[in-house]
Length: 349
Image (tube, rainbow, N blue to C red; front, top):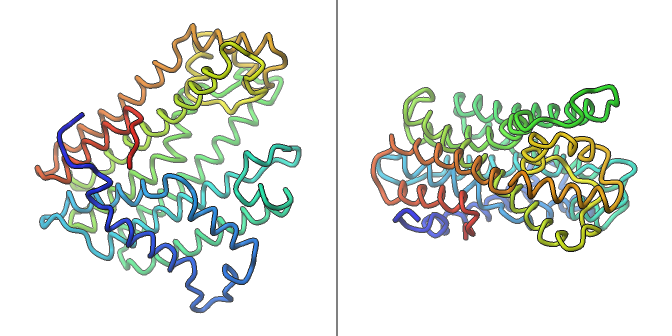
């Protein structure tokens, strides 16, 4: 572990202010109809936003970058507003992604809304709530009154949309019986992850440096972009590795506990690269206990968890190296600690 202060504790007071700011933005009905507070279903969608785990991560990274790149090692109202915008856009994308298929029966896989209301209502709420958050984020973005930041954040939003479309295209191609691909490749998956997850955090970090006084194409701002993207990729890969590892722990002795279907993630695709017979199972599901046992064996044989962690480490080290251009400070040390925490899957707070 690098020597430095805890990254979360360093900005914890700022994060409390951010959380109250988000609540204020969500409940601000100025010029509107007050739909969020008057509509019970939209209120449930707001709870989805406020109760989701990990909602401090993006604001924390934005604030750390803002401090580390400011000559006075402080952040201001514009940094706070940027942190709110980044979190609202990210949450909107998650809510949109939780629209379930018409034949989906396990609503526990969806949002809080899906667990409380009918499927069709839940889907409508996810779309409306996601749109609502994006609209609020757009208003807040306009209030920054900074054209370069507006353009870069908009590019992050564009990346999320493109990532979603690429993921859908990969799934459509995979479900085509005539397709030779059968499942997305690991390279395709990493590209979709970068577009759908990493670019927004990277762009937000770049914008935080811009708000601290650096030009968009400066060495410092570009380093912050690289830091954010690398950190986000590492975090996602570690999460995917941990999820499959937990499934393996539950299913090794009892393959029946292995799910009948799984979304292709890095460990599964790492194993599929080594053992192509796993690919059809990723699309058409694990038909019986024998196929489930086979999938478990192939994952173990490919050492998929370890190889996914190695990929995560590569991205985390790239993020860490990007920080070399920043001036020495306790905040930069905390960002190095954050890289290590993400890389090892340690609790952030």
